[in-house]
Length: 325
Ligand SMILES: *[C@@H]1O[C@H](CO)[C@@H](O)[C@H](O)[C@H]1NC(C)=O
Ligand SMILES: *[C@@H]1O[C@H](CO)[C@@H](O)[C@H](O)[C@H]1NC(C)=O
Ligand SMILES: *[C@@H]1O[C@H](CO)[C@@H](O)[C@H](O)[C@H]1NC(C)=O
Ligand SMILES: *[C@@H]1O[C@H](CO)[C@@H](O)[C@H](O)[C@H]1NC(C)=O
Image: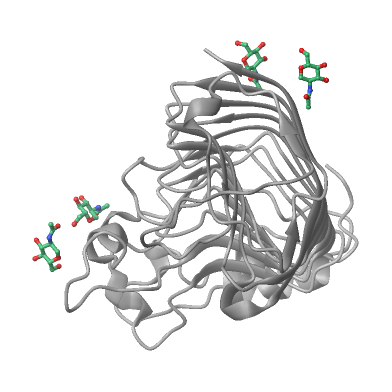
């Protein structure tokens, strides 16, 4: 395997974050810190200590997070040249989180936050590959404030009824490449948030799930900046949506140079949605779009909503070779 340029940083992160909530060590006292050096890691700057084999399971008991940041399980922050790989499985054991989520059941004790399986924050020139991610309590993989990040050959799977289980969410990042992956989830297979540019997505099988989405952008009237997004060869199967762009009313900024090519829809409820009045509630149904074009054989089920001229969305959306089977 490759040389890790920052093994020492990684070692430290591993010791204090990566394994901190691993269930086998989190019995009795709430969190047990273990040192990966005691488990065969070397950290000499040459040996790759970042591979995961077997199954890494999150605690099943959500109360372990009481008093802790409930959005985090595994996280890497500020690492340059990181590669996380291996043939292993990361199991978030999300079922207890899903049962108490406010998303589909707004009861008194429901919880708004649940842990993301793995977060990469402010990482540069890094890679994530070959692993399996299952049953995440929330988003499976978050790539946030990263610059040059390659994702490949992943297998992500959570039930279609699981709340908020995005496959991969990208936010505030530039240069993200996602290839050759299978994503089954209860939310977006891939979602792209504000302040993101230069994203290439190739050869993805998505479904079940909510499709590939850009947004929601510009919440609270903020300025959105999303550009140069290229999505190629994606098969959507049994998804609620295919490709979707959603913006909040009153947003400013732009979402431009967005291309979807070689997209196959197989039993997709809404193949293309451009929704400029996103609020999770009732939508007004008038629609104006400009400088957008696509070939969608099921344009009758393409939904789009109120066009808000303050957000210069659609400045170059090209979608071709969309096939509905
Ligand atoms: C985790 O909790 C769920 C729901 O309470 C239960 O069905 C499952 O058996 C538990 N898994 C383990 C490994 O304890
Ligand atoms: C909603 O959550 C409450 C409390 O967790 C639970 O008692 C109730 O059965 C849930 N309702 C549904 C429809 O899942
Ligand atoms: C999508 O489906 C088409 C037709 O079945 C197939 O040729 C293509 O390889 C599939 N793409 C992926 C990413 O699996
Ligand atoms: C759509 O199909 C037509 C004819 O099949 C083609 O000329 C055009 O380039 C395609 N793409 C778009 C975005 O219209």
